[in-house]
Image (cartoon, rainbow, N blue to C red; front, top):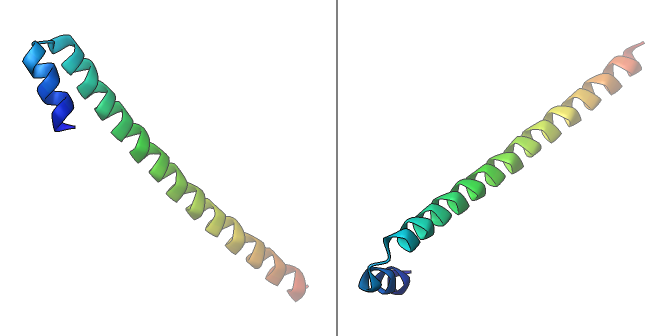
Length: 62
């Protein structure tokens, strides 16, 4: 990554540097969002499993 930054800075191409930094930040945000989505899915799955277990217990009590 430092090679890319050095090449951009040597050429003085600030527009490409800005786009490169924006792309890096957007990629990091997308990664974090997908990681959080995975965690939310696991929490929802655990909730649904507990709800199903509760429903089975309630049915067997009747």
